[in-house]
Image 1: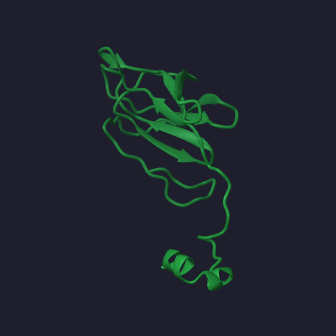
Image 2: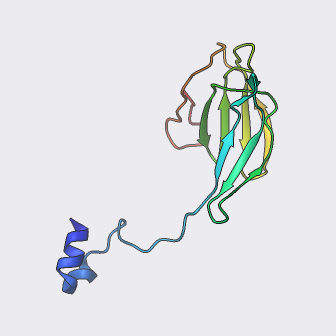
Length: 130
């Protein structure tokens, strides 16, 4: 509705500013492709796509090969959960810190699982991952 009013009532444009209509900065980022299949086993590689240059570049490797894993972003960290290495189902969890560009290992899950989905609930530093 704001867009319609913006175009049909130009004399009222100064009254239409809200959090949805304020000027914004560019948010062009990058895309990460993580793991997957590498022949017959899980892959540990990660690649980064830059839309500004329309190119992919190799990036930091995970500590373990994985496919069919879950992934979530929390507090500027990429959390990679479970999956398979090509032979067995994993319960391991790895964390990629997008600030320091380093991998670390987190506590393993109680159950080995693959083909899972994960979600972050809440927005705080102590928000659980499910």
